Image 1 (spheres, rainbow, N blue to C red):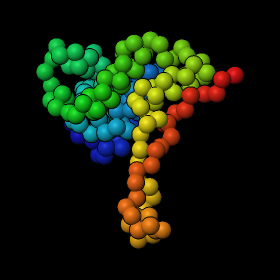
Image 2: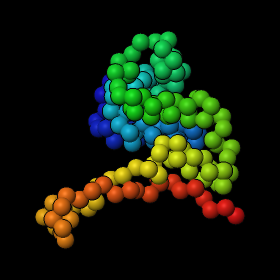
Image 3: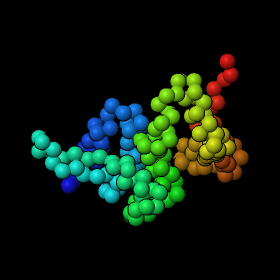
Image 4: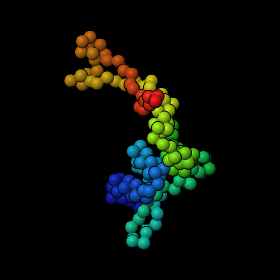
Length: 160
């Protein structure tokens, strides 16, 4: 089955996940990271009573693929892509599904900071902004611009 647009498929996946924060988070992560554009990820359900078709992610099958119990072309992805897929699965059906929804705001803030720290985002660097002509040189010295240290994606909250 095909969809009119990617937006239609993504809207149907969001509708399917609606009402479950872990499923909503997992689906949104998959959509925003590009995983839903892979035809092998979404499962198409047969026609519903009103004649429309639905789409969903079979988390159990995905878990079996990620655990190595089923072969799938989904596994032909980069290490980073597979990590995102594993995190989405953990949000929907794994240990994160059991623990994250029960956190209060303070502890959620701490967990987000811990994830950013574990990723090393406090040590990431990036290019400076290009000059008005798109050049990557220091206007004063004429030397190539260097990479600048970036702030953490999520800073540790201040102690109270």
